[in-house]
Image (cartoon, rainbow, N blue to C red; front, side, top):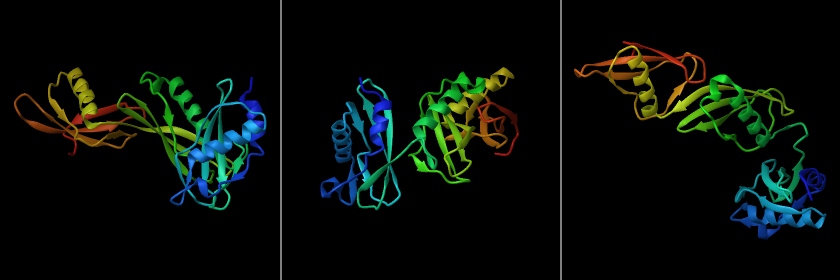
Length: 245
């Protein structure tokens, strides 16, 4: 049975060009690329269950194209191509080589941290989503995210060098204003304060020591601002009545 290890050896020589049939209004047709990958790999002895590439790809020299190949035994291999000339000529980039941030591996690593860390494990964050694979750039940053219901963990990724080494950490939790208002009502009730809370319609971002304001209206119709001060970057916060609105 064919596996990722076998396919990885075949990918090394998988370079090809797309003729006019690959083009759709100045873009590359992902379906044509899928067919070419399947034809070339199976022609070299690989057995594939599925091949998936982006449907429509902008032609640009140096841009990366990531495709997923499922081997006969169900193993997943991500193949990343670099556009050599913006005309449809592609060459594979080894995902073990320096100079590339491979998001599929990064997503798995971040998901593991979210599940192991006590502060985020209870929320049950699911699949992590990062941008498309990219060339590494020293000092570069980008964000990934993970959802748990309507709560989103924002993860900042810092590129440490141009070889693909990165570090990452949760920098904030986002949720709809109405969701946070419900949480704040619960916290007010713990202090025996009964009120309706309004935090607006825009998403609320809880980032360490970056305060924001909601408003509370009691059963007598009196309204007061509530200042919310996030503590840490995993959703904890303090509050006080009378903060700046």
